[in-house]
Length: 156
Image (cartoon, rainbow, N blue to C red; front, side, top):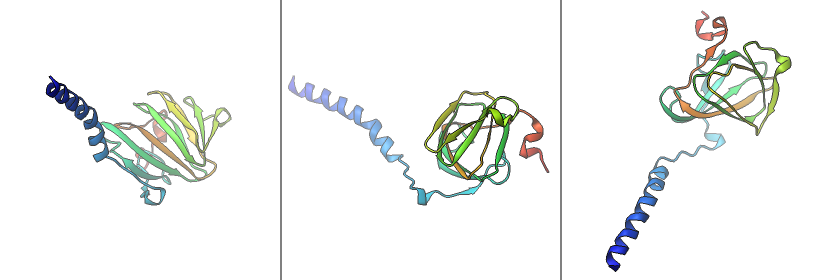
């Protein structure tokens, strides 16, 4: 009976440890000096920089990316098909809700802040200072501008 009990305990422990072992094998650690910035996605106005930290935002599954947005930058009213989960790393995001970019309704969201918006919620943002924003959610990520003329993919 003792051998069976020991085998059962061993099996339970190995089952409990297995998820942690596989998660550790897939770990990602990136320090600030290791962030690799490149041009922003074509879905955003020119001037943004992008760093993908984890995963692939074009595919199904979790991902994390950072956007570096220069002073004077603005993103017209838009929606996302999935949950938008953001952390302000540095600077300030001026975030407004709705289908028109009425800056008087925007709220200043400083560094260290977090916000989450449900799928389909219309919002806009502008930046008075260089700002780094981290997006951590599930893909595929997408953006749909309320006014199609605001979509940078449609400008020549």
